[in-house]
Length: 289
Ligand code: GLU
Image (cartoon, rainbow, N blue to C red; front, side):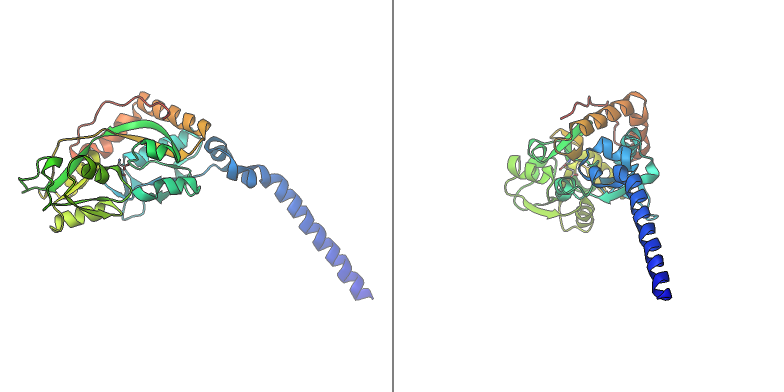
């Protein structure tokens, strides 16, 4: 009897404790970490969670690179951090996630990243699935070839006996095939670094993507690779985020404008892209796209 009464009393105390914890925890945590943030736009989510997951490239020197020590560097990384800071999130609270070209729209729509800064051209097709803020940079499609190559002088030189490498889900490969070189043998990988390996070992004749990306690879292999140097498109880089998040798109656009105005944009380019020898352009005018 006695024992069971004690047990009962204990059970009541325990139950009360659980109830109080649940109550206190629920009351304190629900507005910040509860279901409300899952559906919230970028601005509210950043404010509530004080952390962000951002998609970048991991293999593009000067733009988005995961270094052997596990840190990240590049112009896109600096842009990603600047925008995060403007949204109230410290750089130490950012989780960087690899966003390969073909995965970008999916990562955004599935909510696996909050936004993407990854040499991501604003296109009408992509705009059907994601929102873009920007442009924050304009690059131009070009070709990377062996330093000793003399017969590839532009996209028109890519005849049927040439092997051209690019990346799945990117704009350049399709562009070359559609507009310039219907006969060229197109080899598509998941990442540009795999194309560069193929170029260095002679299994492809050229790599095509944006000049600013190719300049970073050329600088990594001095004397071995060169840019053809005839930019033949305008690639307007945008920051991709959830479709229809108008407030988030505006907040990012404001952040980009501020980064350009206060000199951080130019410094980030000089520090990251400058070493490849790429000429730093004048800034574009961002407008929510
Ligand atoms: N800017 C182009 C694109 O978004 C090529 C670079 C890339 O694949 O990241 O498709």
